Length: 216
Image (cartoon, rainbow, N blue to C red; front, side, top):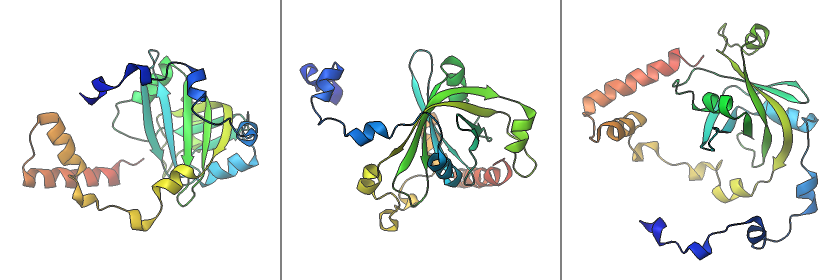
């Protein structure tokens, strides 16, 4: 394995060695960190239709989960508190189980077309208060619960990653048909064999139908 060939002397072991590889942090990068949601962070969250939720269990095993809905689906309850509706998914409950183990979470808010992002770190709880769930409902359907985050740090993140990746550039969009479909990938991963073409088409049609019926 390639990993086994890595020179152990070239593995960073402490923060002093890490920071020795980089120039000192710009003063503005330190000062930009806020302890609560100001008007700029609130405006960013109100425009965002997508957030990545980072969690860990008590042993440190990490997970990142995508969460998406109409812009502003994450509700700002006050300067120190956010609420994320838990919409229907695959019911693995990885992130939610992790929060029960370890409430520390990291959030990354994205806005299509924006190269900068918003990062929020805090402590999460799983909440079923009826008034809150009703305020997060869509088309008369309330989420099973809300992930309520007590904010600890908030800051804007610069555009370098998005500029390098050209993520929003249509010229960089790739043809999804150049890879197997989601159903085909999962079938082969779970059985070790490619699926029958007709069977895959039926499963893909069923998946699309479930998207229409169970987004909320």
